[in-house]
Length: 364
Image (cartoon, rainbow, N blue to C red):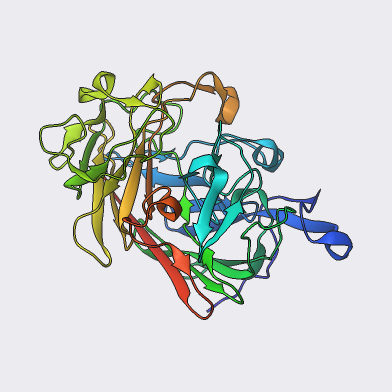
């Protein structure tokens, strides 16, 4: 097995570390490529971000199916969440507060009255350490590490306890990307919920909207959301007879003007995945290119987001992304579970290990 040095493959720059104090003023951010035949994934240790996935279509034409930016500098300054691993508590948290073991904790507000994806500086806005990078192998991989430390966000009484986080990205088979994450609470209980926020367009990024993609979800229930995109009622309702029913392959755009994600038309909704363990949770297909994606995961829920807020958003190659030009399939815990004891708990206690596994299987 050939082991590549832990150095950026294509590009490297120094940026000011956003945390770590005087002993960690500067760290290196790079771009790393995993390649197997004509299938390749590029990512950066800035936010554990997937920058591109190159996949052939039914005629053998390669295209990048991930929305994003051209340069590392653009990812560092971007607030569109193109491709990062979000945490420590991804999705929205009502009023940026919660109660754990009888004590109230407050987090940063960065979404109206609430917090989202870990606050103003979640895992998507930090530099991860490259622990191992193996290229030139049948199953190339990269393992990233981040120590999320107690008091990290600089607020008193905030529950940001010491947490060791590992994320491994590996090409485990032809046109298969495996993502394995785990986190260990070191000293105090903490809520944990990760998700990979990848915008996809199986026709190729920048090729237009995804309304003609068909989607099937292994989900017979969902959590209704209010206008702030919070499951405030705590209900879990059946999808049968609603515009949220994707139990059979259905064009994403078939009913998109009949649903709202907050105050705009489109899907931004959490589904409760049927069954447990590592199982197939979603299948998406683009009829024009012939590309298809099977997503497998071990989490209890999945958020469907249809790029509702893309609006003249600066894109790769000088293009602009518009509404519905990409979609996200975010496997996760229930949103705002920290404030809903009726939802499965997201609390990880000292010595416990949180595990979140995903497998993207592309075909054409």
